[in-house]
Length: 441
Image 1: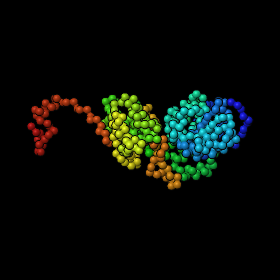
Image 2 (image 1 turned 135 degrees about the horizontal axis):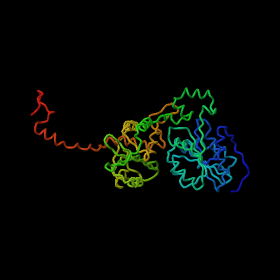
Image 3 (image 1 turned 90 degrees about the vertical axis):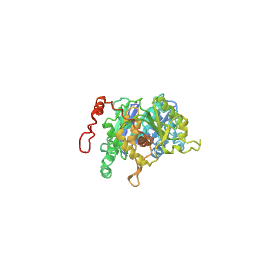
Image 4 (image 1 turned 180 degrees about the horizontal axis):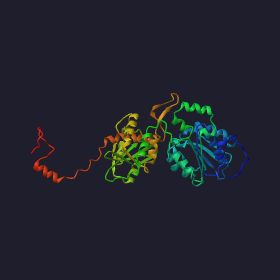
């Protein structure tokens, strides 16, 4: 790569981020409190490392949980700090900047991970990773770094012990990873008077999560967080083997241009055994049929939302008809309001046993599923926040309704008591008495 003259970008790092900028490790994880400046620092680190990259045609990306969020949070920063290095005007449509060394930096959203497939990356920043689906890293981003030995930086504020927490835990023991945790009580980046005011205006859990970087604080507004924690304490998130004597039912949250999430469950007396989970994006119903058949599970019913009986404009067929054509056995979940389904989910969770390996991503989605927050009213509203966790959570609430329609298998018959039967035939049943209290002869 041809070297260009030395350029200076208009950035002076805060002391708290200098160790991050000076690191030699390949990957990095930064857990930082609100208003610490983590996005500005990471955008500048991305610009610098992309500019100094000695590979041909360097490619880098900044990824936020949603594409619109990436634009709102990082686009102005990227244009400003990369300006001395630009080869052309920023591409406002693609949210992309081209540098004088032939490199490109582009913004993406984790809400459409398929848009990232097929590219390569030398450097990537995943901002607010706690709000992304756990599968984004391993299933999409990590392979994009492989042939170029690319590097990743994860930044954000905790949202419980989810995939971001796991990443931070891993970084503390892996010499190939830089890690840092920046708490407001230690950095001095937010004035003490403001922290006092924040503690007064926020709940203890909110303050611990947002300013003290606590992974143990309850996820604010979570619908199922307490119930999932109770299940884990009770040992109901464990190894749940497939029982070939019972049918495996599936319950679907159907998406067309969005994700489809499927839970696999078996019903025993007093128990719902959830043995598997699968989610994919922008796939047809035939894809999911193949996935289910490949499991080899004994087939049960396929529970789908009530609107699956609506005819699609393109084909003129309902999705129920399509599933029947594939050889599946669709049944409609009773129509209901979202909040009623959520309450049904809360009631049914204590009966559930989850396979900790096969349903790991689904459990995390249930843990993260939370109410929408109205910034103007400063209160949670009675509707869920739509994010990566929504599809798995919606599917589970359908399961809660489907369970009511499925009769558990009858208990095994009691062994025949020949001795007592002979006695009763000779002297009568001593438990049956005449009104006066005498034993019937």
